[in-house]
Length: 318
Image (cartoon, rainbow, N blue to C red):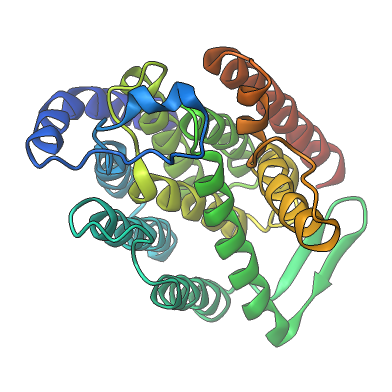
């Protein structure tokens, strides 16, 4: 029952909060800039308010903080998610307010991401007695010792930037994150991690509430404020439930999107040719003539299959 309350309250709060925030973002003129080399269909989106991640970020954090047990696990989930949201906010602010096309300088952005990731790893191991083992499905636990710290950095930084890359079509990042959050509700309940389950439910509610305003045609974009926070939330859930490896399956869409960028860059640098018409992968399908809604809905189905696969693997291998 508590999970349903967390989901419904976060979703309702996001839906109610959005109509107050979107006009403010419009008045502040924090509109999305569109790449001139991107799909022509995106040109009409220029000026759509961005930085909308605050619409769901605050409700998720507040509701989870209120409903989940008041302990260090809940604090970590809230702190890391909010921390990455702040990094994204600073990046968005530099882009849309100060008109710096590259946003927050890469070295600062990466440094803060690494710092927060190390805090997550250190607190989990030392104060939550999580240990330094990672669970490998159908094989067992592998103890990494001190190597666990850079491993968590890799997981968190990869997850946050993977969700960021996926945030390129209306509703794509929010919808696929919602599906991953749904998988983590089940996993957290089975793993008897009440804090993670309540937070996952709030994450699901916030993402679904945001979709009302973010699904095509989007009235607001989440920006890095939202995408970095969502990626950090999923990574933190994975760390606290010892499912870092399983996150690769549950977040399969994010992995595919990231791989498409890596392959595109590698192929062009090595062979001077592109594999895809444009990366990340969702833009490739756009340039092939697929409609935006059609692409997003297909990616939802793929995300759902990955989520179900992750749950099945967890059930039989846990």
